[in-house]
Amino acid sequence: MKTYMVGGAVRDMLLGWPVQDRDWVVVGATPQELIGAGYTPVGKDFPVFLHPQTHEEVALARTERKTAPGYHGFSFHADPTVTLEEDLARRDLTINAIAQDEQGHLIDPYGGQKDLHDKVLRHVTQAFAEDPVRILRVARFAARYVDFTVAPETMQLMRAMVAAGEVDALVAERVWQELSRGLMEQMPSRMIHVLHECGALARILPEIDQRFGAWQLILSALQPSATAQDAAAHADGEIRYDRRHGWAEQGRHTLRALDVSAQQGTPLPVRFACLVYDAALTDALRLEAQLEPDRDLLHGLKGLCERLRVPVECRELAQLAQQFVAQIHGAAHFDAGAVMRLFKHTDAFRQPDRFRSLLDVAQVDAAAYPEWLGICYPQRQWLGHALDAALAVDTKGTARQAMASGAQGLAVGEAVDAARLACIEKNWQPLAQ
Image (cartoon, rainbow, N blue to C red; front, side, top):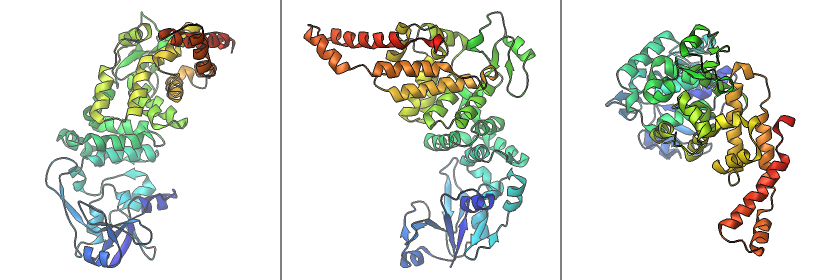
């Protein structure tokens, strides 16, 4: 019986990255032998055990065979005759198919060290095509290892998998698991770019995929006479913006916003909102959102979130962002009443932290336009200061005083609102701050 450290732990050790979790493979053993040695069985689909001292996961070397479409369509074979090379062959990428024995020697039958040196994400064997989750993993690794590229033959294989319908068999929970992890990587735009390039984005997130090649008006510089053709004619560079006419290519703007959100260290709900919040909005609907905030403009976003079973915290912030980011951009023109309405529409008094996350989304969206790069976003300070002032109102004392004066029911709430509005009026001087 021999034990080897495998997978991401070896990869990150060779890259000089911190090793988070160590995975182990045992060759030449049976489940009964491991149980007899004190290991605890935990695997349902294949033999995985917990080490009796370290509690790290240890798996028996195994092979796998495709039996049905999708993520769960596999059968596994594990016995003492399965070799380390056979076990490594079933892994997704060569950089994840390196093992280290107990003496520290590396076993690298598929050239993973060379691909680490060359900074290439390359599949191990054609068996890569049997598991569509591997497409998501490659995209996530591209977001983590930002100077790595996807090997051309791997990109070609991923495209073939998409064309064969493998991606359509992915379950929502696994898509969200990989997507959310990728959004928290160093450069999340690379994940979306890889998914777009291989065609998987059109199947998983068509609302995002359709933004590539489409154009939207920059809300800070609306030009009714401009056209999308004008924008295409005057686009400049990789981040495709037309400064003269106030147009931006939607897909590139989304990618830039994701990376700004990562640079600012924002949490997952903010990054998800930056990805999806205006994916289903046309320019006309954006204008309507500014003029009529109570209108239900969220059909497309609701469908996306339901399809991927997005957690409530992420879903709610994205929906608020779709409705109110455009208004927040225009906060310099607000009076105190408009500020109060914004706070009430967004439930800011009961959920102030969520409102501050909404301000983060607006700030990221603004910073994603080259015209605003490096320019402070005072709207965040203005509205944050106004909210703090309104939250400082003694609502219980105000309510008691109102009731002592004979107010009942809704009138008590109106008295609290009036006190908050007065506090906002006292502190709302956006252009003077």
